[in-house]
Image (cartoon, rainbow, N blue to C red; front, side, top):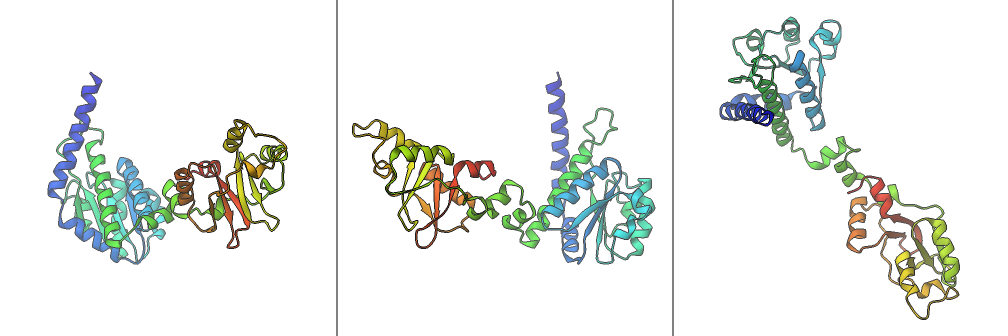
Amino acid sequence: MYAKIAKEVLKTEAQALLDAAQRVGEEIDAATKTIVSIKGKLIVTGVGKSGLVGAKIAATLASTGTPSFFIHPTEAMHGDLGMIGKDDAVLAISYSGESEELIKILPHIKRFDIPLIGMSADKSSTLGRYSDIFISIKVQKEACPLQAAPTSSTTLTMAIGDALAVCLMNKRGFKKEDFASFHPGGALGKRLFVKISDLMRTDNLPIIDEETRLKEAIVEMTRGKLGNVIISDKEGRLKAVLSDGDLRRALMKEEFSLQKRAIEFASKNPKKCSDTQMLASDALKMIEDHKIQLLVIVDENDKIVGALHIHDLVEAGIK
């Protein structure tokens, strides 16, 4: 029963989007060009459900290269109008175009002589008449069976906000690097900005010399908690890496002895990197491609300066 109702809701709202896609036109071009041309910010305003959708639109715009924020019309009447400057533009949202709180601030916005973009179902409404650019958000019917709760109309309004954001991204030539710079804590930001130097370990590394016996190497491996020991020569240059996998394989050999040198059982050609500015995401790919756990970081003379473990990358959210 309820699955059928849910399907009808989705179909109704989807139809509202398809209808809008057929009629959208020059008003989006005009809104895009106007917003790009302003030197200031785009202020989004609205009340009720329109206000909640407006706040989301403002957040999407701000994260995709268009300086934007939301103000509530009531707060605007009590001082927040001072947040609107002469270089700004306003995007006002009201399905009826007659929301009392919103209508009250329209004359004050017009006094600033700045562009007003209105989103409403009725171009002849008060909001429609005040608007320099009008974008229709009219729907044939709400998904609400009572035709009372904004459903199809709020979905359409949000979708048009998304469409406007994408148009602005295209107009500005907004790239994924730009998006990542606004989202440094997100997955994309981490992939594009976090470097090896940000995550590599440099202190208390489990390093032993070429003459260290396997028995002492195991003790150092346990202490270092990296599942590996790094083997260097007397000058601190990388010679080999003994992993826990190397150790397990060594146990299967007839010549195994704890008194032998650890380097005899170690990997003599370990994977290393001398570019500390390499992206951590690229380092992770290197680690995964070579099926290793530890990437040794060296300088231009092959001297050991750090180590990057796969667990460090995973814990940092690098993917």
